[in-house]
Length: 155
Image 1 (tube, rainbow, N blue to C red):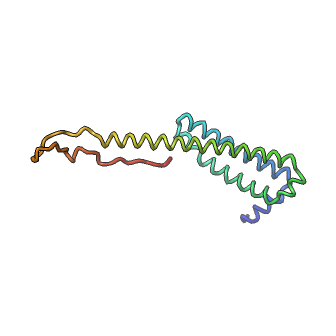
Image 2: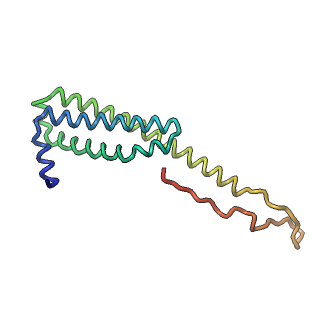
Image 3: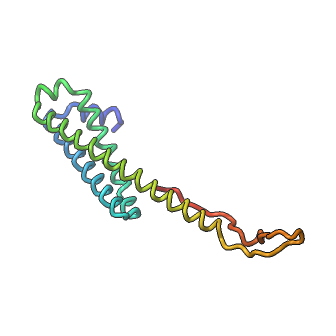
């Protein structure tokens, strides 16, 4: 089945069924984002990243249904006004959850960057041997200074 045929099939679903599918995708997306936010708040970054694939899949699924709901808006409002209102309320919950999720992600990233910056500064300030050189000034052994720090910035 082509993408156009799938879209046409979704667009022609009965109003209540289309709204129910969109609402189910929306609820699942809000739930997985809530789990991710909770894990991030608790500092469980690795566990939170295991939800990425599911979150992406659910977001794509929801966006597909949401676009269909937009295209079929007048028909849905006429045939299933209560279902459309539930979807609108659910979409507001999603917006709230997304804002909270982004705040927690930004905080986690800032904390991680601050931590890495502090570690890099400490590594760069290693105790250096103090000895007088030929000029009578204190010199540092260039072999004892930090050679660099590798950082995985996946988050």
